[in-house]
Length: 96
Image (tube, rainbow, N blue to C red; front, side):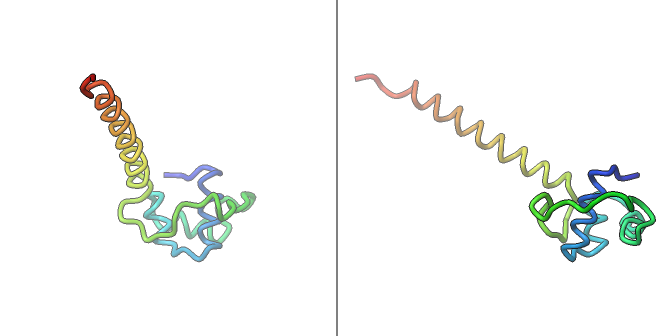
């Protein structure tokens, strides 16, 4: 799987931050060779590194970016469920 320029920029930022190549590969779900190609300039030589504030949390990654997306989705769902419970509680309160 090839990485697009945005992903290459993130890889470069992660490399500059000192992340290990195999951790970066795990995050993107690619073979470590793709990260090595970026590290050596064989791929994406004209792409600038992402800024530190644009990078994902440092690894190691258990299941890559899909796990982080799932976590974000679950947090959003938790918030929606809590809002729904609050709305139900508001309407279920006994009237004086």
